Amino acid sequence: MSLAGTVQERLRSMRADPILVNSTLMFATTLTMAAGGGVFWVLAARLHSAQTVGLTGTLVSATEALALFAQLGLNVAIVRTLPSSRRPAGDVLTAVLLVAGAGTVLGLVYALVAPVLTPELKDVIGSPLAVAVLTVAVATTGVAVLSGSVFLSLGRVGTHFRVNGLLLVAARLTLPFVLLGVGTVGLYGAVGGAAILCATVGVFMMLRHLPGPRSLNPSAELRDARRFAGAAYVSYALHVLPQMVLPLLVVGALGAVEGGMFFISFQIVALQNAVMLAVGNSTYAEAEKARTGRRGVVQRGSRAMLGYAALGALVVVLLAPLLLSVFGREYAEQASWTLRVLSMGTLATALNYWGALRLRLSRHHTWMIVVQGVSTLTMLTLAWIAAPHGAVWVAAAWGCGHLVGGVLGLAVTATLAPVVDEETDRPSSAVAGERENPA
Image 1 (cartoon, rainbow, N blue to C red):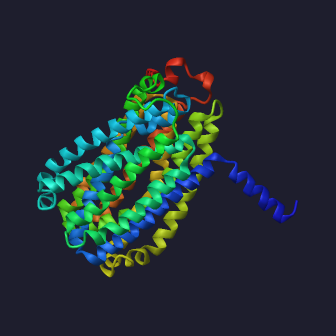
Image 2 (cartoon, rainbow, N blue to C red):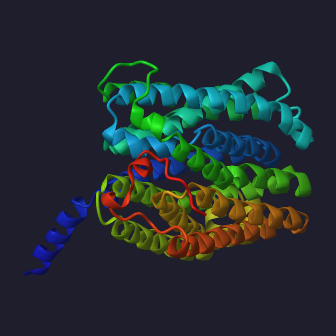
Protein backbone atom coordinates (compact mmCIF):
# COMPACT_ATOMS: atom_id res chain seq x y z
CA MET A 1 0.00 0.00 0.00
CA SER A 2 1.30 3.48 -0.90
CA LEU A 3 2.04 6.13 1.69
CA ALA A 4 -1.06 8.11 0.63
CA GLY A 5 -3.19 4.98 0.93
CA THR A 6 -1.77 4.24 4.37
CA VAL A 7 -2.52 7.78 5.53
CA GLN A 8 -6.07 7.60 4.19
CA GLU A 9 -6.65 4.26 5.88
CA ARG A 10 -5.31 5.64 9.14
CA LEU A 11 -7.58 8.68 8.91
CA ARG A 12 -10.61 6.47 8.24
CA SER A 13 -9.71 4.37 11.26
CA MET A 14 -9.40 7.46 13.43
CA ARG A 15 -12.77 8.83 12.26
CA ALA A 16 -14.36 5.48 13.13
CA ASP A 17 -13.05 5.53 16.70
CA PRO A 18 -15.77 7.13 18.89
CA ILE A 19 -13.32 7.74 21.73
CA LEU A 20 -11.04 9.74 19.47
CA VAL A 21 -13.84 11.60 17.69
CA ASN A 22 -15.72 12.55 20.85
CA SER A 23 -12.49 13.35 22.69
CA THR A 24 -11.46 15.66 19.86
CA LEU A 25 -14.78 17.49 19.91
CA MET A 26 -14.80 17.69 23.70
CA PHE A 27 -11.27 19.03 23.68
CA ALA A 28 -12.16 21.46 20.88
CA THR A 29 -14.89 22.79 23.17
CA THR A 30 -12.49 23.08 26.07
CA LEU A 31 -9.79 24.60 23.88
CA THR A 32 -12.24 27.20 22.63
CA MET A 33 -13.31 27.93 26.20
CA ALA A 34 -9.70 28.08 27.34
CA ALA A 35 -8.66 30.32 24.45
CA GLY A 36 -11.58 32.62 25.14
CA GLY A 37 -10.83 32.44 28.86
CA GLY A 38 -7.22 33.29 28.16
CA VAL A 39 -8.21 36.37 26.19
CA PHE A 40 -10.69 37.24 28.92
CA TRP A 41 -8.01 37.12 31.63
CA VAL A 42 -5.55 39.00 29.44
CA LEU A 43 -8.15 41.74 29.11
CA ALA A 44 -8.80 41.55 32.85
CA ALA A 45 -5.09 41.79 33.64
CA ARG A 46 -4.71 44.79 31.31
CA LEU A 47 -7.86 46.60 32.46
CA HIS A 48 -7.71 45.86 36.19
CA SER A 49 -5.13 45.59 38.96
CA ALA A 50 -3.56 42.29 39.99
CA GLN A 51 -5.55 42.54 43.22
CA THR A 52 -8.84 42.72 41.31
CA VAL A 53 -7.77 39.81 39.12
CA GLY A 54 -6.82 37.80 42.20
CA LEU A 55 -10.16 38.39 43.94
CA THR A 56 -12.17 37.76 40.78
CA GLY A 57 -10.14 34.65 40.05
CA THR A 58 -10.89 33.36 43.54
CA LEU A 59 -14.63 33.83 42.92
CA VAL A 60 -14.44 32.21 39.48
CA SER A 61 -12.56 29.22 40.89
CA ALA A 62 -15.16 28.89 43.63
CA THR A 63 -18.02 29.17 41.13
CA GLU A 64 -16.61 26.43 38.93
CA ALA A 65 -15.93 24.19 41.92
CA LEU A 66 -19.39 24.77 43.42
CA ALA A 67 -20.96 24.06 40.03
CA LEU A 68 -19.25 20.68 40.10
CA PHE A 69 -20.44 20.06 43.65
CA ALA A 70 -23.96 20.86 42.47
CA GLN A 71 -23.90 17.94 40.01
CA LEU A 72 -25.00 15.53 42.78
CA GLY A 73 -23.41 12.72 40.78
CA LEU A 74 -26.01 13.16 38.03
CA ASN A 75 -23.41 14.16 35.44
CA VAL A 76 -21.85 10.70 35.85
CA ALA A 77 -25.07 8.74 36.33
CA ILE A 78 -26.71 10.27 33.26
CA VAL A 79 -23.90 8.98 31.03
CA ARG A 80 -24.47 5.51 32.42
CA THR A 81 -28.29 5.42 32.24
CA LEU A 82 -29.40 7.72 29.40
CA PRO A 83 -28.65 5.27 26.53
CA SER A 84 -31.12 2.75 28.01
CA SER A 85 -33.59 5.19 29.60
CA ARG A 86 -37.26 4.92 28.74
CA ARG A 87 -37.94 8.53 29.76
CA PRO A 88 -34.83 10.46 28.59
CA ALA A 89 -36.46 13.90 28.47
CA GLY A 90 -37.87 13.47 31.97
CA ASP A 91 -34.48 12.30 33.24
CA VAL A 92 -32.68 15.32 31.83
CA LEU A 93 -35.27 17.84 32.99
CA THR A 94 -35.24 16.36 36.50
CA ALA A 95 -31.44 16.43 36.57
CA VAL A 96 -31.37 20.06 35.39
CA LEU A 97 -33.71 21.23 38.14
CA LEU A 98 -31.88 19.27 40.83
CA VAL A 99 -28.51 20.66 39.76
CA ALA A 100 -29.82 24.22 39.52
CA GLY A 101 -31.39 23.95 42.97
CA ALA A 102 -28.22 22.54 44.50
CA GLY A 103 -26.17 25.27 42.84
CA THR A 104 -28.43 27.95 44.28
CA VAL A 105 -28.06 26.61 47.81
CA LEU A 106 -24.29 26.20 47.51
CA GLY A 107 -23.91 29.69 46.06
CA LEU A 108 -25.78 31.23 48.99
CA VAL A 109 -23.75 29.29 51.54
CA TYR A 110 -20.48 30.32 49.90
CA ALA A 111 -21.56 33.98 49.81
CA LEU A 112 -22.12 33.85 53.58
CA VAL A 113 -19.03 31.83 54.54
CA ALA A 114 -16.30 33.06 52.16
CA PRO A 115 -16.07 36.65 53.51
CA VAL A 116 -15.55 35.24 57.00
CA LEU A 117 -12.74 32.94 55.88
CA THR A 118 -11.22 35.48 53.48
CA PRO A 119 -11.94 39.07 54.66
CA GLU A 120 -10.64 40.49 51.35
CA LEU A 121 -13.83 39.17 49.71
CA LYS A 122 -16.17 41.05 52.06
CA ASP A 123 -16.22 44.20 49.96
CA VAL A 124 -16.77 42.16 46.78
CA ILE A 125 -19.74 39.97 47.74
CA GLY A 126 -21.12 42.00 50.61
CA SER A 127 -24.13 43.46 48.77
CA PRO A 128 -27.42 41.67 47.95
CA LEU A 129 -26.82 42.24 44.23
CA ALA A 130 -23.39 40.61 44.36
CA VAL A 131 -24.80 37.65 46.31
CA ALA A 132 -27.57 37.25 43.71
CA VAL A 133 -25.08 37.34 40.83
CA LEU A 134 -22.88 34.75 42.54
CA THR A 135 -25.81 32.45 43.32
CA VAL A 136 -27.27 32.52 39.82
CA ALA A 137 -23.82 32.09 38.30
CA VAL A 138 -23.17 28.93 40.33
CA ALA A 139 -26.59 27.46 39.46
CA THR A 140 -26.32 28.13 35.72
CA THR A 141 -22.69 27.04 35.52
CA GLY A 142 -23.79 23.76 37.09
CA VAL A 143 -26.45 23.31 34.40
CA ALA A 144 -23.88 24.02 31.69
CA VAL A 145 -21.57 21.35 33.15
CA LEU A 146 -24.43 18.84 33.21
CA SER A 147 -25.29 19.61 29.59
CA GLY A 148 -21.83 18.48 28.52
CA SER A 149 -22.47 15.00 29.93
CA VAL A 150 -25.90 14.86 28.31
CA PHE A 151 -24.59 15.87 24.90
CA LEU A 152 -21.77 13.32 25.21
CA SER A 153 -24.22 10.54 26.06
CA LEU A 154 -26.46 11.52 23.14
CA GLY A 155 -23.54 11.61 20.71
CA ARG A 156 -24.17 15.31 20.05
CA VAL A 157 -20.81 16.67 21.12
CA GLY A 158 -20.91 19.12 18.21
CA THR A 159 -23.87 20.86 19.86
CA HIS A 160 -21.88 21.02 23.09
CA PHE A 161 -19.08 22.71 21.14
CA ARG A 162 -21.40 25.34 19.68
CA VAL A 163 -23.20 26.13 22.95
CA ASN A 164 -20.57 25.76 25.67
CA GLY A 165 -17.66 26.64 23.40
CA LEU A 166 -18.41 29.28 20.79
CA LEU A 167 -21.39 30.95 22.49
CA LEU A 168 -19.71 31.05 25.89
CA VAL A 169 -16.56 32.64 24.49
CA ALA A 170 -18.52 35.26 22.56
CA ALA A 171 -20.43 36.25 25.68
CA ARG A 172 -17.37 36.33 27.94
CA LEU A 173 -15.43 38.57 25.58
CA THR A 174 -18.31 40.99 25.11
CA LEU A 175 -19.58 41.47 28.66
CA PRO A 176 -16.34 42.80 30.25
CA PHE A 177 -16.60 45.92 28.09
CA VAL A 178 -20.28 46.34 28.93
CA LEU A 179 -19.52 46.08 32.66
CA LEU A 180 -16.23 48.01 32.60
CA GLY A 181 -15.94 50.38 35.53
CA VAL A 182 -17.88 48.24 38.03
CA GLY A 183 -14.68 46.72 39.43
CA THR A 184 -14.48 43.17 40.70
CA VAL A 185 -18.25 42.72 40.72
CA GLY A 186 -18.45 43.78 37.08
CA LEU A 187 -15.58 41.53 36.04
CA TYR A 188 -17.18 38.58 37.81
CA GLY A 189 -20.58 39.57 36.40
CA ALA A 190 -19.22 39.00 32.90
CA VAL A 191 -18.48 35.39 33.82
CA GLY A 192 -21.89 34.94 35.43
CA GLY A 193 -23.78 36.51 32.53
CA ALA A 194 -22.11 34.19 30.04
CA ALA A 195 -23.05 31.19 32.20
CA ILE A 196 -26.71 32.24 32.32
CA LEU A 197 -26.90 32.59 28.55
CA CYS A 198 -25.24 29.24 27.81
CA ALA A 199 -27.27 27.33 30.38
CA THR A 200 -30.52 28.65 28.92
CA VAL A 201 -29.58 27.74 25.36
CA GLY A 202 -28.15 24.40 26.49
CA VAL A 203 -31.40 23.30 28.18
CA PHE A 204 -33.37 24.17 25.04
CA MET A 205 -31.00 22.20 22.82
CA MET A 206 -30.96 19.16 25.13
CA LEU A 207 -34.73 18.89 25.26
CA ARG A 208 -34.94 19.43 21.53
CA HIS A 209 -33.01 16.21 20.90
CA LEU A 210 -34.77 14.07 23.51
CA PRO A 211 -38.00 12.10 23.04
CA GLY A 212 -40.58 11.44 25.72
CA PRO A 213 -42.67 13.59 28.07
CA ARG A 214 -41.15 16.75 29.55
CA SER A 215 -42.14 15.90 33.12
CA LEU A 216 -40.42 15.59 36.47
CA ASN A 217 -40.94 11.82 36.45
CA PRO A 218 -37.53 10.24 35.88
CA SER A 219 -37.06 6.74 34.50
CA ALA A 220 -36.56 3.65 36.61
CA GLU A 221 -33.01 3.43 35.23
CA LEU A 222 -32.05 6.81 36.69
CA ARG A 223 -33.83 6.19 39.99
CA ASP A 224 -32.14 2.81 40.39
CA ALA A 225 -28.71 4.39 39.84
CA ARG A 226 -29.02 6.65 42.86
CA ARG A 227 -26.43 4.79 44.97
CA PHE A 228 -23.95 4.93 42.13
CA ALA A 229 -24.76 8.62 41.66
CA GLY A 230 -24.24 9.21 45.38
CA ALA A 231 -20.83 7.55 45.36
CA ALA A 232 -19.87 9.38 42.17
CA TYR A 233 -21.00 12.66 43.73
CA VAL A 234 -18.95 12.26 46.90
CA SER A 235 -15.81 11.22 45.02
CA TYR A 236 -16.36 13.97 42.43
CA ALA A 237 -16.87 16.59 45.15
CA LEU A 238 -13.69 15.48 46.87
CA HIS A 239 -11.88 15.74 43.54
CA VAL A 240 -12.89 19.36 42.89
CA LEU A 241 -12.65 20.60 46.49
CA PRO A 242 -8.99 21.68 46.09
CA GLN A 243 -9.95 23.83 43.11
CA MET A 244 -11.91 26.03 45.51
CA VAL A 245 -9.69 25.75 48.59
CA LEU A 246 -6.19 26.19 47.13
CA PRO A 247 -6.73 29.77 45.84
CA LEU A 248 -8.20 30.70 49.24
CA LEU A 249 -5.13 29.28 50.97
CA VAL A 250 -2.81 31.26 48.72
CA VAL A 251 -4.76 34.52 49.12
CA GLY A 252 -5.04 34.03 52.87
CA ALA A 253 -1.36 33.20 53.40
CA LEU A 254 0.32 35.33 50.74
CA GLY A 255 -2.18 38.04 49.73
CA ALA A 256 -4.41 38.79 46.76
CA VAL A 257 -1.55 39.63 44.39
CA GLU A 258 0.10 36.24 44.88
CA GLY A 259 -3.36 34.71 44.59
CA GLY A 260 -3.73 36.31 41.18
CA MET A 261 -0.39 34.85 40.09
CA PHE A 262 -1.42 31.38 41.24
CA PHE A 263 -4.83 31.64 39.59
CA ILE A 264 -3.47 32.68 36.20
CA SER A 265 -0.94 29.82 36.32
CA PHE A 266 -3.70 27.38 37.17
CA GLN A 267 -5.77 28.61 34.22
CA ILE A 268 -2.97 27.63 31.84
CA VAL A 269 -2.61 24.20 33.44
CA ALA A 270 -6.40 23.79 33.30
CA LEU A 271 -6.06 23.45 29.52
CA GLN A 272 -3.72 20.50 29.98
CA ASN A 273 -6.14 18.93 32.43
CA ALA A 274 -8.98 19.51 29.99
CA VAL A 275 -7.32 17.32 27.36
CA MET A 276 -7.11 14.43 29.79
CA LEU A 277 -10.62 15.04 31.07
CA ALA A 278 -12.02 15.01 27.53
CA VAL A 279 -10.32 11.70 26.78
CA GLY A 280 -11.38 10.29 30.15
CA ASN A 281 -15.04 11.27 29.77
CA SER A 282 -15.22 9.90 26.23
CA THR A 283 -13.53 6.69 27.36
CA TYR A 284 -16.03 6.28 30.19
CA ALA A 285 -19.01 6.87 27.89
CA GLU A 286 -17.77 4.25 25.43
CA ALA A 287 -16.94 1.78 28.21
CA GLU A 288 -20.47 2.06 29.61
CA LYS A 289 -21.97 1.44 26.16
CA ALA A 290 -19.75 -1.60 25.53
CA ARG A 291 -21.11 -5.01 26.55
CA THR A 292 -17.64 -6.59 26.57
CA GLY A 293 -14.00 -5.50 26.51
CA ARG A 294 -14.25 -2.58 28.91
CA ARG A 295 -10.69 -3.04 30.10
CA GLY A 296 -9.43 -2.64 26.55
CA VAL A 297 -11.42 0.58 26.11
CA VAL A 298 -9.99 1.97 29.35
CA GLN A 299 -6.47 0.95 28.41
CA ARG A 300 -6.66 2.80 25.08
CA GLY A 301 -8.01 5.92 26.71
CA SER A 302 -5.47 5.86 29.53
CA ARG A 303 -2.52 5.60 27.18
CA ALA A 304 -3.81 8.68 25.39
CA MET A 305 -4.22 10.58 28.67
CA LEU A 306 -0.68 9.86 29.82
CA GLY A 307 0.77 10.71 26.41
CA TYR A 308 -1.02 14.06 26.24
CA ALA A 309 0.02 14.85 29.83
CA ALA A 310 3.71 14.21 29.11
CA LEU A 311 3.68 16.26 25.91
CA GLY A 312 1.82 19.16 27.50
CA ALA A 313 4.10 19.24 30.54
CA LEU A 314 7.20 19.38 28.33
CA VAL A 315 5.84 22.30 26.31
CA VAL A 316 4.69 24.32 29.34
CA VAL A 317 7.87 23.77 31.33
CA LEU A 318 9.95 25.08 28.42
CA LEU A 319 7.67 28.01 27.55
CA ALA A 320 6.37 29.05 30.97
CA PRO A 321 7.78 32.63 30.99
CA LEU A 322 6.58 33.23 27.44
CA LEU A 323 3.07 31.97 28.20
CA LEU A 324 2.81 34.13 31.31
CA SER A 325 4.21 37.23 29.60
CA VAL A 326 0.95 37.48 27.67
CA PHE A 327 -0.73 38.46 30.94
CA GLY A 328 1.96 40.96 31.87
CA ARG A 329 5.63 41.11 32.78
CA GLU A 330 4.99 40.73 36.51
CA TYR A 331 3.29 37.38 35.90
CA ALA A 332 6.25 36.08 33.87
CA GLU A 333 8.72 37.26 36.52
CA GLN A 334 6.92 35.95 39.58
CA ALA A 335 4.85 32.92 38.53
CA SER A 336 7.00 30.93 36.07
CA TRP A 337 8.07 28.28 38.56
CA THR A 338 4.55 27.97 39.96
CA LEU A 339 3.33 27.26 36.44
CA ARG A 340 6.13 24.76 35.78
CA VAL A 341 5.42 22.78 38.96
CA LEU A 342 1.67 22.78 38.31
CA SER A 343 2.30 21.58 34.76
CA MET A 344 4.51 18.71 35.87
CA GLY A 345 1.75 17.76 38.29
CA THR A 346 -0.57 17.01 35.35
CA LEU A 347 1.28 13.70 34.90
CA ALA A 348 0.01 12.74 38.35
CA THR A 349 -3.43 14.10 37.45
CA ALA A 350 -3.58 11.79 34.42
CA LEU A 351 -2.71 8.86 36.67
CA ASN A 352 -5.45 9.87 39.10
CA TYR A 353 -8.01 10.15 36.26
CA TRP A 354 -7.01 6.67 35.10
CA GLY A 355 -7.56 5.20 38.55
CA ALA A 356 -10.88 7.03 38.99
CA LEU A 357 -12.12 5.74 35.63
CA ARG A 358 -11.31 2.16 36.60
CA LEU A 359 -13.01 2.62 39.97
CA ARG A 360 -16.26 3.75 38.31
CA LEU A 361 -16.25 0.60 36.20
CA SER A 362 -15.47 -1.60 39.21
CA ARG A 363 -18.94 -0.82 40.70
CA HIS A 364 -17.40 -0.68 44.19
CA HIS A 365 -18.92 2.47 45.62
CA THR A 366 -16.97 2.67 48.86
CA TRP A 367 -13.58 2.42 47.16
CA MET A 368 -14.53 5.25 44.79
CA ILE A 369 -14.95 7.49 47.82
CA VAL A 370 -12.05 6.21 49.89
CA VAL A 371 -9.43 6.57 47.16
CA GLN A 372 -10.44 10.09 46.22
CA GLY A 373 -10.74 11.03 49.90
CA VAL A 374 -7.15 9.98 50.56
CA SER A 375 -5.99 11.94 47.50
CA THR A 376 -7.81 15.12 48.50
CA LEU A 377 -6.81 14.91 52.16
CA THR A 378 -3.17 14.50 51.16
CA MET A 379 -3.37 17.47 48.80
CA LEU A 380 -5.10 19.87 51.21
CA THR A 381 -2.93 18.91 54.17
CA LEU A 382 0.28 19.47 52.24
CA ALA A 383 -1.05 22.71 50.73
CA TRP A 384 -2.05 24.07 54.15
CA ILE A 385 1.43 23.34 55.48
CA ALA A 386 3.13 24.72 52.36
CA ALA A 387 1.08 27.89 51.73
CA PRO A 388 3.14 30.24 53.95
CA HIS A 389 6.29 29.16 52.08
CA GLY A 390 5.05 30.24 48.63
CA ALA A 391 2.72 29.34 45.77
CA VAL A 392 5.29 26.97 44.24
CA TRP A 393 4.94 24.68 47.25
CA VAL A 394 1.16 24.78 47.00
CA ALA A 395 1.53 23.73 43.36
CA ALA A 396 3.74 20.83 44.45
CA ALA A 397 1.14 19.75 47.02
CA TRP A 398 -1.47 19.63 44.25
CA GLY A 399 0.64 17.22 42.21
CA CYS A 400 1.51 15.05 45.22
CA GLY A 401 -2.15 14.60 46.11
CA HIS A 402 -3.01 13.46 42.60
CA LEU A 403 -0.05 11.08 42.58
CA VAL A 404 -1.22 9.42 45.79
CA GLY A 405 -4.76 9.06 44.40
CA GLY A 406 -3.58 7.61 41.11
CA VAL A 407 -1.28 5.02 42.64
CA LEU A 408 -3.89 3.98 45.21
CA GLY A 409 -6.68 3.79 42.60
CA LEU A 410 -4.69 1.56 40.27
CA ALA A 411 -3.59 -0.65 43.17
CA VAL A 412 -7.15 -1.10 44.44
CA THR A 413 -8.60 -1.91 40.99
CA ALA A 414 -5.79 -4.40 40.39
CA THR A 415 -6.55 -6.29 43.61
CA LEU A 416 -9.60 -5.53 45.76
CA ALA A 417 -12.02 -3.96 43.27
CA PRO A 418 -11.32 -5.21 39.71
CA VAL A 419 -12.98 -3.62 36.69
CA VAL A 420 -16.22 -5.32 35.60
CA ASP A 421 -15.24 -6.23 32.05
CA GLU A 422 -18.37 -7.84 30.56
CA GLU A 423 -22.10 -7.33 30.85
CA THR A 424 -22.50 -10.92 32.02
CA ASP A 425 -20.08 -10.23 34.89
CA ARG A 426 -22.53 -7.73 36.33
CA PRO A 427 -25.37 -8.94 38.53
CA SER A 428 -28.71 -7.24 37.92
CA SER A 429 -28.27 -5.04 40.96
CA ALA A 430 -24.89 -3.87 39.69
CA VAL A 431 -26.37 -2.79 36.37
CA ALA A 432 -28.66 -0.48 38.31
CA GLY A 433 -25.81 0.77 40.45
CA GLU A 434 -26.87 -1.16 43.53
CA ARG A 435 -24.07 -3.66 43.99
CA GLU A 436 -22.83 -3.80 47.54
CA ASN A 437 -19.18 -3.17 48.13
CA PRO A 438 -17.67 -6.17 49.92
CA ALA A 439 -14.74 -4.09 51.13
